Length: 257
Image (cartoon, rainbow, N blue to C red):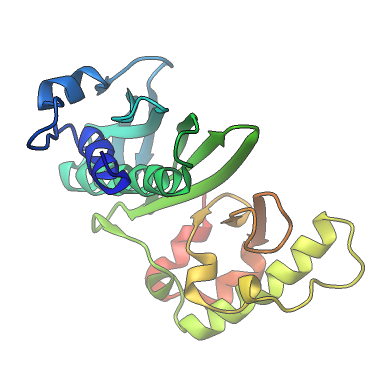
């Protein structure tokens, strides 16, 4: 079976569907047997409120292995229950998409004939205007490993993802501030003198700051290991004091608890 078909099968499992190919012994029932997917109670359900509406959070796990038997995964994320159905659906769909993308990346990096494994976990947070989740994944192959984080931020008033365009009244100005603060904070937190040099990964471009969530202290940014040439994943928090003047009026409350 080709890697491309293997990827289709794996993502089909995450979507709770089977896959098969003419001439193969694989059937959808075999694929289903390779994975178990259900809302589990491995940890006590979390609860939270956003936009005045209460939600529950249930850890949801999809466990399985690749068609060639060399890859295994335990893909976990938090799933919203109750509350506004439109918000819950938007949040759950976006979270599932993040995990699918992370697993697809692991499959693309897998070496033929080498065992590999993938695992992910999610942390859900509730704020006045949004429900957010950081999904951290780890991919292991041989003696090597790679960790990355993906984020989901859903506006609990509109059931829509909050983009950087939504967040800032003037997106280019917001991106410039994120770029400047990234260079300052990365240098400070890694014992560097002065500020970080200009790099493609800290340039004021939308894709460089795509993984973020709002926290009490500020805008928490997540960077994969090689984006800032540090060799490890990095997390920094840009203080709200630096960002509040740049927020769009509709998003001003995002800086509040």
